Image (cartoon, rainbow, N blue to C red; front, side, top):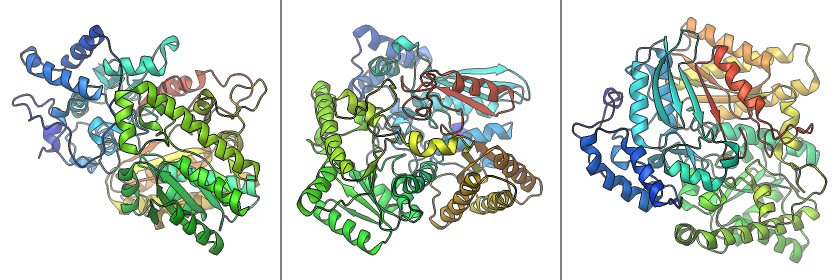
Length: 597
């Protein structure tokens, strides 16, 4: 077992670790199909060998070529660290400066097997949200962070560490860019090739920027979304007995189960991957699981009738679930669902982000690698069936929204009936969650304000919870609008529920939504508590893609922008640059594979 000191000592080359290959008993990323030419395969090998001295190239070249052939990418499994991967207390990291230790704390949290979706492939969430492209990069980055001073900045180029550069005390200690591809080449097929060659990387939102806080972040966003969907669509404050149907229990989507219970409704979530479903069940995020549609419908009816909160995981394809709900409507005349959405990784539908209803999970994974064309056709047929069922239920009064996962966009590309008509390219038959629900909150200046207690001590997190609650309660008593007060109340309720529901997975983290006034007040109060010793170690304050003006994504964060600029990315770039010279410790700019910046 390695120590943190060894992890920070650079690549382990003398001797090299044993190549144990893929670890059994943990989830692994689907096999990629980049379709490289012989010349591109040669480039992929050359780029992977650049991290190693020439005398090791012969041994590693055959090994890396085998990985590329078998898995579609060179992950360098030999160099998977033999350490318990988790967020260690900040004082345990061998660093020259605390800010570098905080970054290490966050990186190791992103790769913690209890947090990461595919830990050995360095994927935190979303099916392809990479922390790094390979394990050599991890070792080098940890070494650089152990050496960086207050007059240096580590520069990251799509997972590749360019090195430490001279800077100054108030500059960022870390600058990250991911996926900066020329627009004409920013397509899914081109990306798969470039990622396999080791020249670009998709960092999702908080994977490649090293600030994922586990599924808690999306729990909070989903709670607010469901609460405000009830207000807007159903005209109710109390969601007891209301049924919310959706899909996905992975890295981000797994939050939906816990969010349903906190919001007080009946949540039915379909998941094809039994490992993901069981992970959420063992964590206590799912109250019940079943692979029987009959049992699923019986549990739904009972909870609906008794107005009891429920998070039910259905092990099966969501298309089967939607079609069964249509069957119940047709045969009994009863609409059993009030709210619906989807959180499959439809930004990546043909590489494991969406599974077709026609095949079992295992067979689908085999076909994905063996015959991508047939797999693609089945996915698109499945999307058409899913939309057809949703449309029938919607016509009878169910309210459905797109969760910004490109579900409606991919359904449209598949030929499903999601067209709205008109000239606005960002509008479909159903709104995105930003257009109808969260956009109103963003327009008030509210967005994600997240913090991580780097001591790793739950007591520090409890202290920050009390601080944040006190600040928001004080803000309510000041002169603010009714809508702002409602947001403060929702977030106070959230903090209280988060503590009760044990939402911490990995680092000691919390999220809430606040406007600028609340953020500044909370940050100052936390700083004071650290100075007074009531909090034992520094606190990392971060934002995410929902933060106001942080993301340009026309089918997601900026889908409610109607002046024609929804497809422009100046806003995200200006945020990145502005934060860099206004004192941020680290900044990241990501291109989301043609979907957004």
